[in-house]
Image (cartoon, rainbow over all chains, first blue to last red; front, side, top):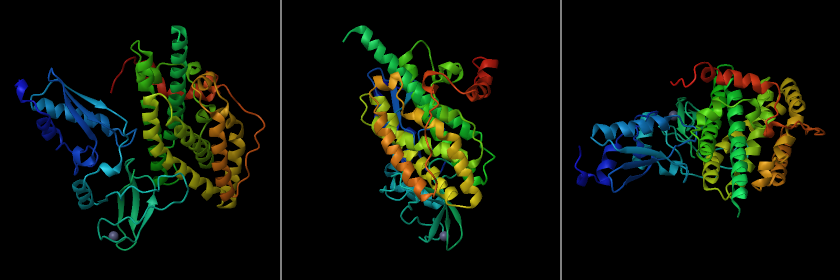
Length: 168
Length: 253
Ligand SMILES: [Zn+2]
């Protein structure tokens, strides 16, 4: 058993913040910004608060399991993961470090959140940069990609098709 | 406030949340029928992504309803163990997909409805309803844009795609009104259906104008879904969707 007095919020954070995202394993849950809070009550019960990127994102259940498992491996058994919806996750919570890792992995990181989130048809995002050759001369192929959080783009210069982590 | 009044309010709230959950679940299920069948893979993925978003909304609503109902009710028992006349979904959501045009138009009508409905729900007095609406509306925006762009593309496309959109408009015209005819639970929760209808109509008018499509002549409305009276199609959907839980009770993955 872990000595009660030793449980600090910082320790718990340090254990869970390196857990990789189940769908994009090059970034961590911390990079993604889905871990919202860690709480420890007087009886040393640990509660980790997470929020889904998209409401139907099936990765959330996986994330909860990984968090519980990782904590258990470090000797913390009285843990629970609580899912909250509010405040709603936004790509603005993605860390700068995370954006760099995404780009290196071949996924264009999200642009700064902007005003495209209106229901007007045929809007274009501001220029999305090709993660391979850095050209801004790119086009959208499909609004939905391999996971809910991505759209499919293609570079007009190097011709590479790529995922864009769409602003949300 | 009397105790009796409080419990009536709670029942209306549960019914309203189930209405939102059922409508999103059933349309999600219909959309998932396209998996592996859409005309091109990007659109197959788009529609299954939308199905996933809707399923996520449905789960959030069912989970919330389950906490209000108590008695060991869970999101799964609500989805898998209620029968047809307990389902409160809009008739529009249970209609067969038919062709691509019909699928698109169904989605467009529903997404535009959801968009303005959720905007209204952002001001609801119930914190959890606000949280779900606030989360979901960001995704619904994508659904509106995706389906709306297809309405324009097909309507203002070839002679055949134009004709198919016209057929879809004809097919669905009697299922629009139900969205804007308040059920008891909507009245009780002070949902302003007229306001939603007005904004819905403006968006549809503008999109149809761009798509060179005629507006539906709406002279008759099929209703009943909100109160558990459905078309013959819902039974088939539930039969397929609930088969596993009915045949192997409490089976888990
Ligand atoms: Zn390129």
